[in-house]
Length: 430
Image (cartoon, rainbow, N blue to C red; front, side, top):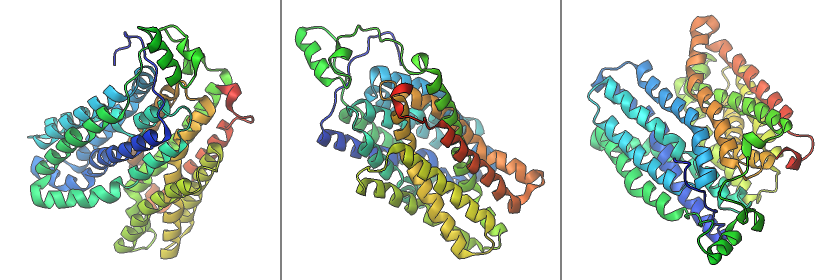
């Protein structure tokens, strides 16, 4: 990720090419999220049995990877703003393949941890944020539908990879499954990232090259006429109002990340503590994923007519309503399903909204940096949330009262989001 070479100018793709790129990213997001995030839930038991590690240590390695992901996100975002995502995302797929090779060959806890630390290096290069930043960079400002399509595919990662991982595990064992994941990153994702993401146009070298770069630049002739050294932008050039909005928006999405991670890990226990059976709890949990996809599909069907800032408020409100339902309900299957619908749709829209709201408030010229800075905190909170709630429950809170902690967190997210939204639209804050 060297910053020594002068940045080129991004090629603006026509609508058909942008649509193809978003579909291609959809495939790589399914593989990336499915293997790096969801699959451990299926493989974990066998890994523990063979390597002789405890369940907390099994998931501590994954949390460590998520922490590295969050801490590395700003660097990745700045790199994409400056040099594009083509080489970086291809390298990310190569690193993910290496991570699964190490995990699959692990002969003990140390090597297992090492594999997940390598996975943490890959995550910020292959997850949603680099895909969002890359698409935005090549969209010429028309990125909403592309971002929605990427998240629509990504929402299927768990739905597809839980059964796929189970089938692979039954046929090949957990080591063989890791080998298949390594090959998927190497033979599917890496070629897609290298071939589908356009290379930047050089800023100079000939008159014709400058003219082509000017046509390709989202900022138009003024950007192409600039020197190879970019003027300050992003956080360094932001107004106090923009920085204030960023801080509150980051707080809002960090609180949302806490709720998502804590709920998805502890949901079955929370529901059983309210008197539901395990089978009922599993059914309720299974409804969340499809509702995420339905919510994202609805944004596609509506053609993006809801403004990004309004979409973000709707998403946060739906999550708050869902958490409130589960806190107030008892052993009610209907209330549980209502929670799953509200939480699933809100969580599904939040992924779209976060990518759109960042562009709406802060503009697209330093999109990768803004999103990366936010992701640093969001993913760190996401990583520690399950353990934080576990600590509270173990300290005497109990599962019966844990839902009220989540209510307080989600209502705080709603307030923080509302404070973050500028009173007047965004030009003054860019």
